[in-house]
Image 1 (cartoon, helix red, strand yellow):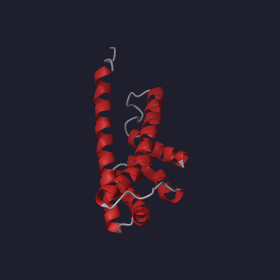
Image 2 (cartoon, one colour):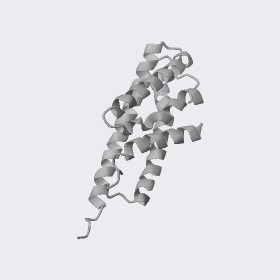
Image 3 (cartoon, one colour):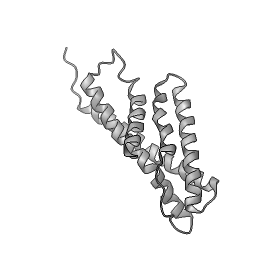
Image 4 (cartoon, one colour):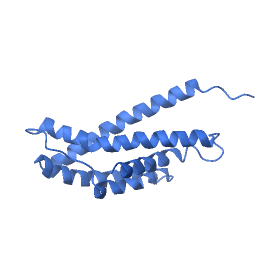
Length: 156
């Protein structure tokens, strides 16, 4: 399962990096590969945490935390298509549709595990996904600012 989540993270990272490291952008191959590897690990960790955060939210609103919820290959496999983010214009829309579909599947698995209704489970999954997404985006922006602040100016 970890390999599937790592591949999904690689797909997500590739979708985010492809537009940035296009030919003529000035990125070296070594730097692009390093960013891709780092991004893959971070995105895989976020994907792994998504059901755990949703499970924690059900413990907050429900009588008690359920036994557990983990990714299954059937639930995680669509995440391999996360690289659609790289498509111009339609990429963000397709990315959103993909995550809504994966979230609906996760909510379907969470509802019986937590003993709550599907809509409540979907709300927990959505809140967990948005919370993780906002946190990761803040870290991305901070890393980008630090990177530009510490990158030496090109020599002329």
